[in-house]
Image (cartoon, rainbow, N blue to C red; front, side, top):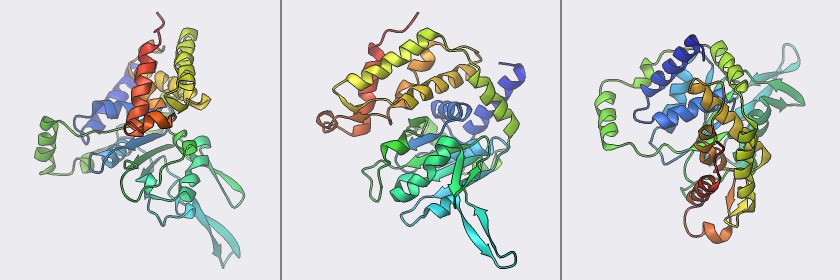
Length: 315
């Protein structure tokens, strides 16, 4: 990695860390998602910093940012935009919705209906939307960071598998440690750390890094390693649905971004191993017999960890 690029990456990490205390892994995974041209799903209980992470990332580089608060009465047009009749020109004019931004925060995405959730499918997969028969390109880079409350909370609509598959990875923030929470209390008394964040990179810098990530080398042995993990998810009796081919591609892109952040132009087995659970956990479905034992998300994650640990790492 060139020195200038390395400095930009370090500055991005430090900038986000000023708003998110004690969550270095979550920050790293968010940057991996951005550089791998993916989308991030953050699932956890309210109040642990899901929205703050998304806002801090957007504030750390020059970009357009939109926040969509998903509610049960939200319509697809509230996300994509709407055509409005102009009496002067006697024509309909399209007014873009909040989806037309570099970073889109889909806050509490599972509180809206499946109809509105599906408005994001084309945007997240192809970086474009189709409105009134016209296909419109979205800006680059384009990143959706969605937050959702656990499905057992009141007023939630579980995301369908097709929607979940659009996310590069799903992460959890978790509660902060005692020391970290004390630091939050001490610093937040003075000011809101988000307000003090300044951009440390430009859109062109991010696009250049995304291109560099795509050029990171992946050895054939690592392809076989990833495919062995994927094949075992499809054969185990603990899972009713295994990882899709899109999931395999997403793992490779995430591993390339991880190698890039570590300053390498080649992948190591550990790049795949450490990201497999985050990339695959929301793409698989636990079998009914095993899912009844505990929460489904915990079941799939434990099964995936066992599979990853059982596959021989290439030397």
